[in-house]
Length: 277
Image 1 (tube, rainbow, N blue to C red):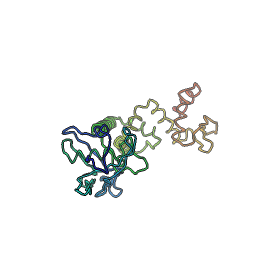
Image 2 (image 1 turned 120 degrees about the horizontal axis):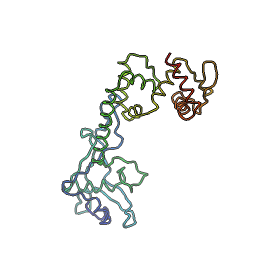
Image 3 (image 1 turned 90 degrees about the vertical axis):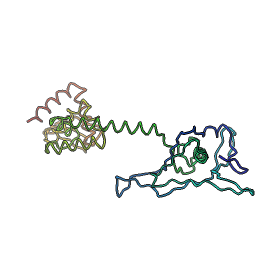
Image 4 (image 1 turned 135 degrees about the vertical axis):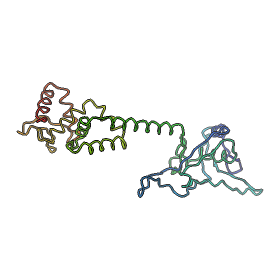
């Protein structure tokens, strides 16, 4: 950063922390990029977004506020020109700066220190952030983990037997009497869109119990009164009153009752027997 009478009188320690090694890359990305509501396969990115080239920061080493700027040059009369700092939509809203390039280093130092950088831990929160520093290694690791998780889920979904497919669909509280191709497609869609939830489902040891209880509800073997938050036999005899009134949460509590008490075990055995008929 060029030091002038007006700008960039910052402590050497603070400036040193912004230095890039030759060839080192700093990747910045505009904030607020979202899926295009008209076409979810694309991102809605402004065609151009600029970062103000002048700011004021608090220098913790000097313990005072300092005016900083992305100064390009000054003339003999002290007039300043500034670097144009723009994020462009045709570049994916990204800006890549490379160490060893003088202009890139000047812009990087300014972007590192200014309050428009959401990744700056010392930024003034009263100013709206415009961009953020992208940790390429962390991003790559996260994307690989997501990709591997999806691959694991889709492979597991493809290996499910017809009986397992029906059990897991029933465990989700859905109609498992539909054609197996439809049920399998539903599970594979879940695995594709939300692999973690799918893997949690198939790794849940109590999923088969939920399947039995949900089938029993759909067949009328047991009933659930949402107003009273109560499971009962068709005769009206109460089985369990639960704390939560929504269907899926209530079934979770019924599973817990069946697992945790001798009475619950007997109730589940009876429900399972009647649900098979």
